[in-house]
Image 1 (tube, helix red, strand yellow):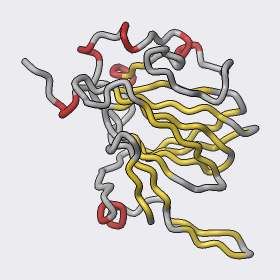
Image 2 (cartoon, rainbow, N blue to C red; image 1 turned 90 degrees about the vertical axis):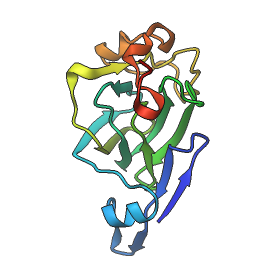
Image 3 (cartoon, rainbow, N blue to C red; image 1 turned 90 degrees about the horizontal axis):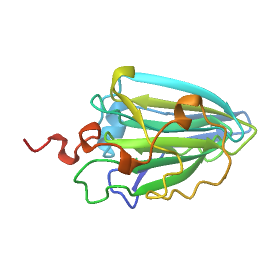
Image 4 (tube, rainbow, N blue to C red; image 1 turned 180 degrees about the vertical axis):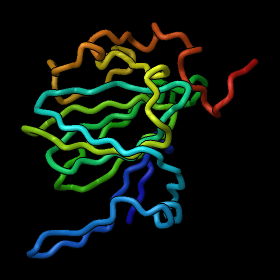
Length: 189
């Protein structure tokens, strides 16, 4: 297994060991001991699976409090996946990292707690799965406008299919800092 830091060091690309032959393939998608030894020592408490069609964009979502770290990957199809640092006081605040994940490349993407997350589907359909470090809590969920000009994500589509909820999200500059996670985990009193 190879774990690579991105431009935002806490955001990681994981390339699990993969064993394939004429019958198909086998790969271990999570093993707490092996991943911890490789530098990803987190406790996951919930797994999620979504199915989406071409052009669907889900995001940019976050929870605060109850921030969720996520290990995401694609079982079938292809997506462009994005992590945005929204931690107040972070040296990489408003910066983003994007990666193409697919059933073919079998890469995983680790988005740490305190980041907004979103993805868009590039293939006809995609099965997207992820492990979370905290439980979903609808009372603490938030979101950011998918095409926020201050973040300037280079999405590979211009007219995505959005949920009604995602259509209503505001740009990051219109979200009060009290609603965002804090770098280092503690607010100044």
